[in-house]
Image (cartoon, rainbow, N blue to C red; front, side):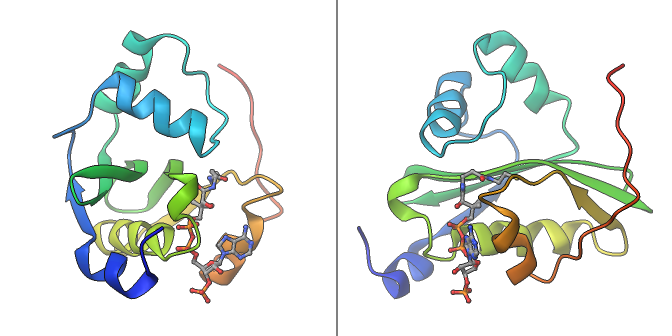
Length: 138
Ligand SMILES: CC(C)(COP(=O)(O)OP(=O)(O)OC[C@H]1O[C@@H](n2cnc3c(N)ncnc32)[C@H](O)[C@@H]1OP(=O)(O)O)[C@@H](O)C(=O)NCCC(=O)NCCS
């Protein structure tokens, strides 16, 4: 595992789909693990093509993290997915991706669904829990 300082220095955050393939996305999500329906590669790719913002984190040409966002650029942004390779979790990659998302979605409210294991991460990054969320499958 690379040292935190070295990794931070060498980490590259990219915007867009460059370097991504459905296979790379699926592998990262399964390893993280990020529980998403990723059995159908064509569907996964549509999820990415239709997103407003895709940010990827690279360390020495290796894909180590992904953030995917839907945003109207004015009021609301929704963080759909955030995943970091397990062997480099805890080294600041998730924070860098969130900072890059916040920079690009400035002025909007960034909302997301968390899981029991990731809620501490969002609390640490200054997110506040909202009690008035509703959901219905369309
Ligand atoms: C959650 C996840 C994206 C965090 O990314 P990461 O690169 O490991 O996190 P970072 O190293 O950037 O952590 C940033 C800070 O949050 C803290 N943190 C990270 N995960 C945490 C957790 N689960 N609970 C509490 N604090 C946490 C870190 O200690 C760090 O604090 P520091 O800056 O004071 O040192 C990553 O662990 C992951 O991919 N998990 C599996 C998939 C997942 O749960 N995704 C989110 C779905 S909603």
